[in-house]
Image 1 (cartoon, one colour):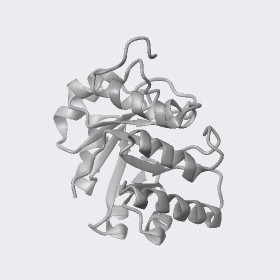
Image 2 (tube, rainbow, N blue to C red):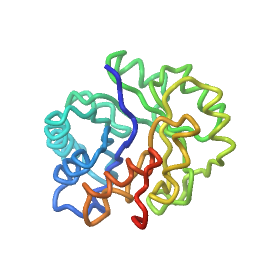
Image 3 (cartoon, rainbow, N blue to C red):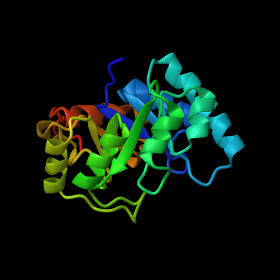
Length: 213
C-alpha cells in the first residue's frame, strides 16, 4: 500500500479545540490530513487502549493510517497501521522484531547517524525535528536545515518534518524532497480544525492563499 505522508497529524488532547479526540481527528482528515499519530502522554494503558480503539474507528472510516506513538502493545491490540518511536524508546530493531513486517515503523531522528541507524533497523519512515522551537516539546533537539538536507541525501526513506511547523514555514520543505509535514498545534489547536488542515496542505504544496496567515 502506498502511504501518503503529506500531512501527518500528531494528536494532543490537551490542545485540541474539539470536544473529543475522535471528532478532532475526523475534522483533520476531512481537511486533508493523510496520516494520524495517536500521541497521548500521561494516560493509563486502559484509557489509551480505549482512545486508540475509538480513534481507529474514525481513521478506518476514511481509510487513513493510524500510527500509535511508543506503545507497541496498544498498536498491536487495536490493529493500527504502525507505531512511531523516539530515540529514548525501545530500540528500532527490537520494535521491528516485535511488530513484524506488516506494520509501519516510524523513528524520530535528529542527525544523519540516527537516520542511518533507523534505516538499518528497518524503519519505514523518519520523523526529523525539531525544525523550529515548539511548546509541545520544549526539550527537543533542534535540527538545522543543513542537517535536514544531509539526512535527505543520506537515506531513501520517506521523511516528515516536525517541530514548530506552521503556515509560515510549511512551503520550505516540499522543494527539498521532504515527503510531509508532521503537525500538532497548527491543526488540532485551531478553532476550525478542518480549515487549518486544508490551509497546511496548500502551504506545503506552495499554494498558500494570500492574506491567509
